[in-house]
Length: 421
Ligand code: ADE
Image 1: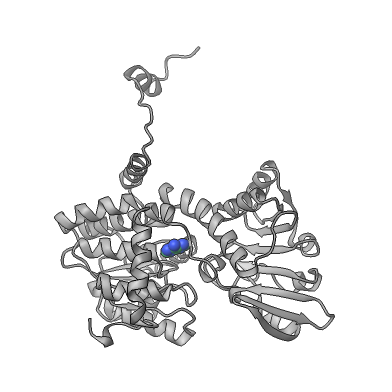
Image 2: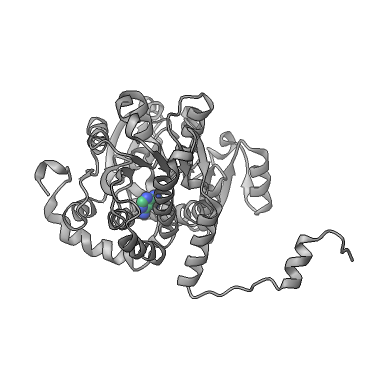
């Protein structure tokens, strides 16, 4: 591939990156099965696809699968700090997908990379956070003509896209991969649960046992983080705005309180809400000396970093992904990974076993879109149920787990209403 066809940190890292891509592939049997079928059937032949995803070993395997299906693919990062540079090089050199992603890229480069991924005039967009869709709708309306549709990986992106559809400004159909059971129940819960704690531990090397661990948001991601923090011996506190989720956290045995109450007692704070300024000035004013603050939501807006900067008399980098903010009253607050998603900034994102299902959904939804786009409207669709179910069946098979079947008698009973006690 020519030099101008990619922008990665160092192409010489490719062989090192490819070993990691192969390591991940072993734990992605569902995606591998799809790749084998795609190789034979070529369902994406002639389709140009732009992907804006976290550039990880799992994404590399998805790129390989889409290419096997005949797609002409380009990839850019969906976050400036989540790229694995050796993997980006491997995707270019060994998988043959033009890739535009460098860990730590500034905002200008981030958006330039999005433009480069879009420059091939894609038919399908594959997003994690809706940046391709929003860039096309803001600056690339000339691309709309050639677009069949798109897919969206994450909760935050789906929220943005639903808002666009409701306002009547969404110009092509989207499949919300995030909303498949085989995505959010596993990726959001077990993936975010494990990888957030992994990022926190790699960044700080601090003991979690015995700490007060405050989690803002008790959606699927928050539930996963809470489960793992509790497993490591933390006293978990949940803050919520949704009464049902607050009740759920309470009955899961967790302490539920307001952020105002949690601020002075927390040792660790993790925000996973998808909303803005969840940990803000009033909380910083109350935190203990040494409090650690991290975000695991998609965008770096959950922690009010400008407010923290204003409160600080000095800042310094203590170790990789740990910035110290020394406040005027002498307290120190530690911000991890510049407030970007800590699981991908300081660790490697979700493990391959869960991304296997998330990316199987992506591959099958791209295939579905290529086949059905002419019948689809300009709105956000759920993942077709048969795709979701098929992925669950394939994952169980790959894990060697058998399940029971309903007997004809049981089936009949479930369809009838006459029989009682
Ligand atoms: N999002 C969270 N974890 C990820 C991973 N390992 N690869 C791609 N996207 C992710």
